Image 1 (cartoon, rainbow, N blue to C red):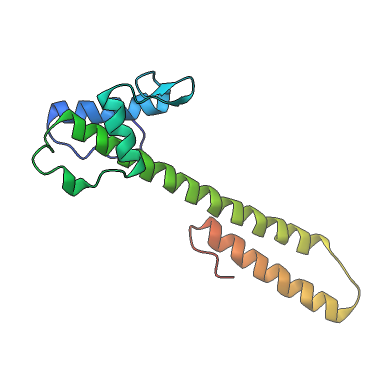
Image 2 (image 1 turned 90 degrees about the vertical axis):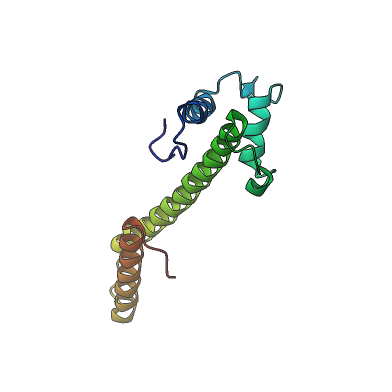
Length: 142
């Protein structure tokens, strides 16, 4: 089980179904994948991918939320949210890397002209602050 994915179920059968779907996703098990693409030839896979795509709304599960099908659906939802969070973190880290590249560039440039040196120092400070904020988990204010 991935540390970023929380199993929401209390009932043992549903907990096991949820965990199995998550494991199948990360191991690219044949129950969810065929030849590297989505497999929808079984009910578990259909429910999982509907949850992953957000194709069925939770309120449509009126009386059947106590079923393995619902646990499969919720596993798909959880994986989709997890993947979205990973993508957002990757984008944040890419911005931090760019800020660090700017910082290195500002540090390596040198010009004897005093006005240019002040501008480089200003760019250096701005790049350093951006990199520090992004690496600390903040947002890029510029």
